[in-house]
Image 1 (cartoon, rainbow, N blue to C red):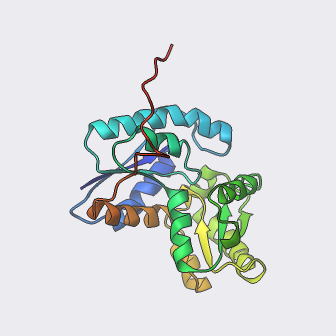
Image 2: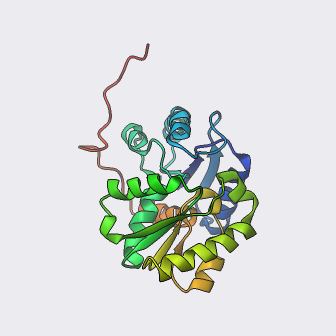
Length: 235
């Protein structure tokens, strides 16, 4: 089995954090490779950033199909270009946001999201509405930190994150918390131990889901939503 994890930004620091987590949990019989896009933004903190990153991510997904990977993981908690990537790929493509939402539904009644900067709370609420999960959504609260800073300062993330998580539980009614950024990889264990509720690391959770689904040969439906697009002549 070959699984490719794509970081759709150009931050080597974030890529290495993701790779470290994957190395800790990947089965020895699985080839799990972690890469970043060759060009694009250093971090994805806006829809504009996501738009800049998507063409290079498309290139990476096409190459992964050619190289015989069995599954692909998009390692950014905004799932940039996910629908288009699923359309063009012959193998399953999993976004860490979509997968984390799905798993959260299995673990408790309502989930909350810990995100990066305050303006991202609006986009997270929009994503929850997109998936029709408003009735299972408790809240989103922001660390007030950027993606690269989150990767650089784990203790600060855990300190602020713990305080926000307690408010999510006590004030918002959260039973599950999602660490809403790929650069938070590896930070969930301490919070979960202290809080006593499930705290989802989106990288670890998505990776293990993908291993399992690949084992049983699950794939994408290509007859509707993710039907392969017609060839286009690009001028």
